[in-house]
Length: 229
Length: 90
Image (cartoon, rainbow over all chains, first blue to last red; front, side):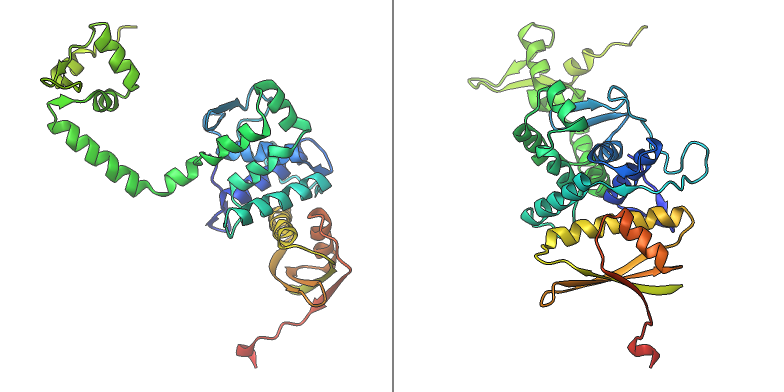
């Protein structure tokens, strides 16, 4: 995630992504900003640790041969004054994104709308991604339909911290955990907990006459051992 | 800084085209400002009856406005300097 300041204002992610696309075109010494530039610009904004995660899809920016960080000024520190104009493909992509935003009842074009607009792109980097990772246009849109950009999660820290605090407080006082709660407590998947119970690694109790399982706090803590490298 | 209007005749234009053009204009204005040519897109008016769009820019010259529109890939027919008049000033 990159944040940048423009005249003291934090720029919105869409502006940052588009500017990153222009920078990429300049780095390529190309007179045109292409759809590839736009896709990489979008990826650079949503990437964390150079990894782009969209639902079940994961891309490595390094693997794609892309600069991990966006330098809004070029390497020399001086502003690159090369003139770059949008290609007609890029113009069409913007219009498609605006159309998608409208159908999504959004007054603004968001990152997700620009990304969805790539579903029908069958050339350049997007075509390579589709082939390499075996993604269809439908899968691309489906992954994006469930996607929450990192920036949105960060936008509501109070709600998230509040929820976490509540869970932490509840766990503090808890003596018996359901498999789901035990999984959350240890930060593992429920299936992992159930696996431990099945193999006898984790003792569990059954509520008399019920199917429901309960795990004691001590038994969960006993699973943890010091790490010796 | 002077104010300019770019007049475009865009028959059959859709809101999507206008939005896309706006995004491109904004990014190109930011980029040119960083390059040392302070251009700002102020606002645009679309006149449905004549299918004309009037886009207002603050810029050091009409060439800067022309350059911005070329980079943003938005067609225009004319660019003129304009005199701004607001109710508070009269």
